[in-house]
Amino acid sequence: MNKKLQTLKYLIADFLSAFISWGLFFTYRKMFLDLKFIIIKEQPFLDNNFFFGIFLIPFSWLIFYTLSGTYKSIYRKSRLKELGQTLFQSIIGVTIIFFAILLDDEVYSYKAYYKSFEILFLLHFSLTFLFRLIITSITAHNIHNKIIGFNTILIGSNENSLRIYNEIENQPKSSGNKFIGYVCVNGSNGKTEGECINDHLTCLGKIDNLKNIINENSVEEVIIAIENSEHNKISDLINLLGDTEVIIKITSDVQDILIGSVKITAIFNTPLIEINYNLMPVWQQYFKRILDIIISIIAFIISSPLFLLAIIGVKLSSKGPIFYKHERIGLHGNPFMIIKFRSMYIDAEKNGPALSSKNDNRITNWGRKMRKYRIDEIPQFYNVLKGEMSLVGPRPERQYYINQILLQAPHYKHLLKVKPGITSWGQVKYGYAENVSQMIERLKYDILYVQNMSLYIDFKILIYTVITVCKGGGK
Image 1 (cartoon, rainbow, N blue to C red):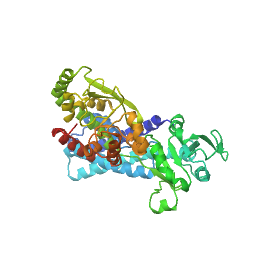
Image 2 (image 1 turned 90 degrees about the vertical axis):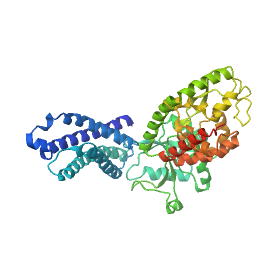
Image 3 (image 1 turned 90 degrees about the horizontal axis):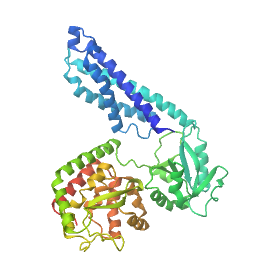
Image 4 (image 1 turned 180 degrees about the vertical axis):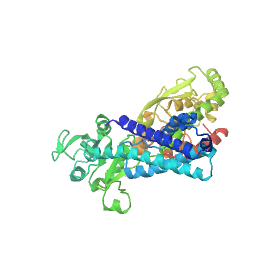
């Protein structure tokens, strides 16, 4: 599979549909609705607005489609859902064009405005959906006939996993799962590595090596097919997969169906519970990133006097560098170097990693003042601009402490699904943690944030953070 090529197909199709529909609409509008054209009989293609709009409008549509998530999960599109999505997008987009461009036209009758909206909508929607339908139908045909497949592994090595494997493989239409093997739940289940379940699936290893197996085999989907007696292990498996990007599906029983956990997306597919990690609508994700950049730039400009003051204060308070750089763990477990103004003496961790406390004698006098108003964190806006952090998100931790947290709270890995932030729900609600127990206590607020991410929540956290900074509530 080539996701970039598939995305390019949709981009070209959407551009052409917008290009053609606007060209046809512009010609129709000039010939039948524009009062000036009716009077002077001007050719529509001699109008400079024609050439301006026929290129600008299609590119604007592509930006709109990208922000609304059209090109996400490019191989997993439903034609029926695409019909609804295209209809909704066309209504919103044409309405914006109507009020931004068409409402100023001089027309022979107010009814011409309704006609303009109607014609542009019908042309744009019809052509856009037609082109998309052709690409999506070809893709669906290739998936159903196993020409296109998603690398999939089964977790489980028992009768249940074999049943699920046979059921999926024998579907009238393939769901796109390309099984490359299975992973044992524990050492006693299944055969040894390299052997197969019923001569069909190769054992790729055990749970302890699951992440490496996923990375080495470019796995896109994981199906958990363990016995009912092992259901207590499901939460552990989901936590283990918490910082990966794979789609997780779990076998269902009658109870799951009755309580509404199983959502059917295709008539012929095996009923599975899909763990949904669409944390924010795509347009909000893009908008969140745009806000990160804009607010960070503004923050650097506004805080420039504080920036200079902090540099002088750090240099006068103690020997050592102005900035403190240290490795933190970010999105999907990727490490990055966080930047702060140094608030401690240079040998602060000569005896090993340690969290700061209320009366920490490792903190300089100037450092204590910076921390009170969080001036020491101003350089982190640079991390935000680089895309390593966000304004709002769980605070990034060192691997040393993550290892300790995971021993007591394996669900910490769910925080690695999002970018760490300068401020967080956990920090606003709980404050800084002085030990691992407090970090685990604060964790529940950050989990709540990850499960309820929205721009609305981000704005509330930012407001409360500003209030805390103004009151000098840091430490």
